[in-house]
Length: 147
Image (tube, rainbow, N blue to C red; front, top):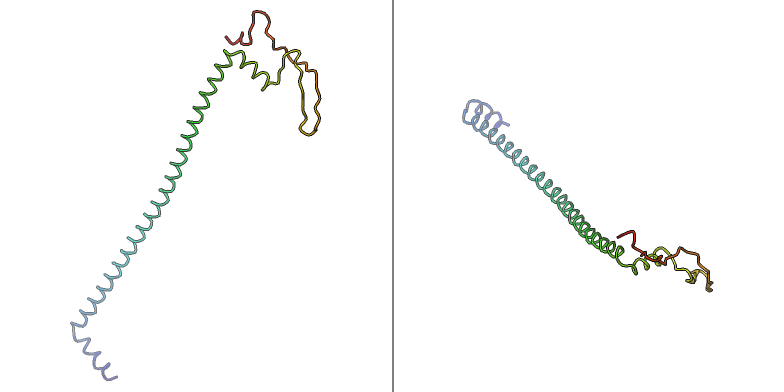
C-alpha cells in the first residue's frame, strides 16, 4: 500500500507519465479506427462478392432461357417449312388429297365397304357407308378450286 501512495504524487508531478498515458490513448484510438476501417472494408467486399454471385446466377439463367428460346425458334422454322411443303403438295398432288381425305377426314368413295372394329369387342361388323362422293366430276379435279 505504501507503494501505491508513493506513486500517486509522483505520477502527478511527473509529466512524462501523463504524456505516455495520452500517447497510449491515441494509439488505442488509432487501433480502434483501423479496426473499424478493416471491418467496413471486409463488409464491403462480402457485399460485393454476394452481389456478384447473385448476378452471375441470374445471368446464367437468362442465357439458358435465351438458348432455349433460340432452339424453339429453330424448331418452329423447321416446322413452318414442313407445313409450307405440305400445303404445296396438297395443292398439286391429287393422290395426296385423296389420302388425306381418307385417313384424316374418314371419307370414302361410293361403293367402298367400311369395316369398323370396336377395340373392346372381339368381333367385327360391316357397315354400308354413306359418305361424300370423292369421285371428281368430268372436267374437275380434287384441287380445281385451289389452282
